[in-house]
View 1 (tube, rainbow, N blue to C red):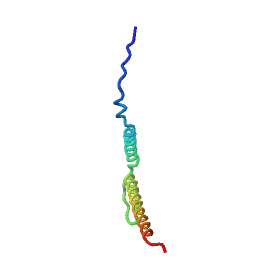
View 2 (cartoon, rainbow, N blue to C red):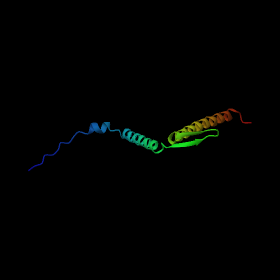
View 3 (cartoon, helix red, strand yellow):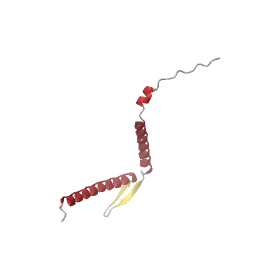
View 4 (cartoon, rainbow, N blue to C red):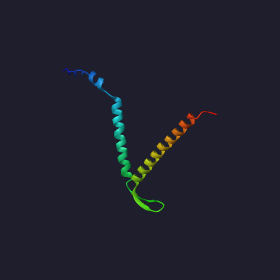
Length: 95
């Protein structure tokens, strides 16, 4: 009894349209979304934040994101100040 062989399929179209960078980015994006969901679920407990004159109950995830935002904004502003200081020192003629 002879077993028929499967015909070889043309894979040139698949090779032409294969985009490994795109698939790597999609996988990285899915992992990032899964991590973000896990982060929110793990940090949803409520904590007390004591300010100088007041106290507030906030979800821990919002407190972490607020600290991240303030840190990013502060870093951007400090970088702008440093760039401005360098420009001014380069514009002044050396004495």
